Image 1 (spheres, rainbow, N blue to C red):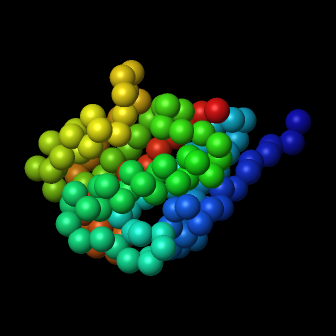
Image 2 (spheres, rainbow, N blue to C red):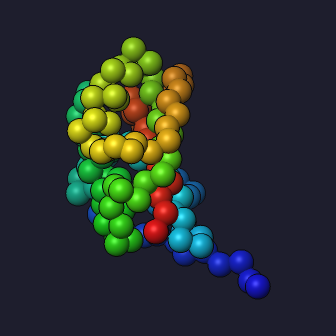
Length: 127
């Protein structure tokens, strides 16, 4: 059997800023690239941690919507922050954004993110 994958391409989330796809679907599992707080309409990175975090959640919703799925299909998130002291804000956003049972999650502090972003989130979802 041949290996197949479908590339996700939507204007409901920011275009890729490098040599990668917005996401890839294989056998009903979606691997979405990390999202930073860029407004897809203006291609501008919002200022401030909370503004970026809220925009990221909107971008993730756009990716999901483009594939006919929603937040309940997310099974894993990976979160990258430049200041782990903001972890409480991540938890607050999680409570607003998700319902129990929550997806699996990891969160790590990194020294830098693309375009000077303060937070980046990638998700894996399944149909």
